[in-house]
Length: 73
Image (tube, rainbow, N blue to C red):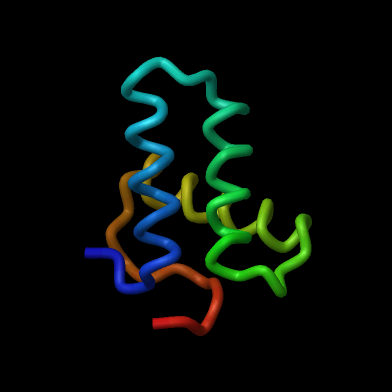
């Protein structure tokens, strides 16, 4: 279970977009935008870094443990 709502939303969106055939870069870009909706104070670079870390952690490596990221619930 992913604890942070923004992280859960990003990972879920990425997985679902990829399942319906959305190219990787387009899915990543959409998820970066989604993160910035949750965190408008975040810079684009920060959003890209976190989204890429979360996708790598949860989707690529299939890890279930906690990840670094924002402090939201």
